[in-house]
Length: 248
Image (cartoon, rainbow, N blue to C red; front, side, top):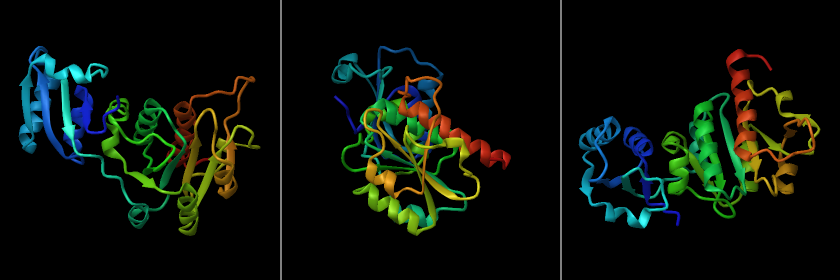
């Protein structure tokens, strides 16, 4: 079961309360857990924001037993996805995006979101079909980072890529058979979007064809199966290194 209407875990709920970007309807806290600094912080933030919280019997958490909820669950309204046109109207010089093509695992999406926030990526584009959507597992895995970055849902990644190019963005696809390495691109003097695909399928041929650059992560042996969130980390922190040092 993957619930899109709950946030679970102390850190994720704290981050959601701090960010204030999600409408939290109610928080339940197990009577069986000992109060600690994190629980006290959740209560404090909830009171400041007028969010109802209740201490309930552990039986109330039985429907969510498969989640590592740590005895605290927040019931929230669905995430508000950002419109691509609105995002572009607010973008600045040397903005960055990550485009996800066919990511199916919630834990991977959560890890990708967390990496993007840490590296200062300005937004993430996901397709409305054939890609995992934001749910409670994504929320938990991102450790609350989901509240600190725009998630843009589009009907067509191909159309989104074309719109980016029409607005002077450079689009960079990743592919294991590419000739260029990811660190050969000069990221610090352009708006860019990096397309990442699922491990088993990679980026679609249509998107690769539509991209301005295609890059790979060089491997030292034939075991070419790097997890997509790890692969993104290598690339995205290279873009940050260039931005901070001014060197490619």
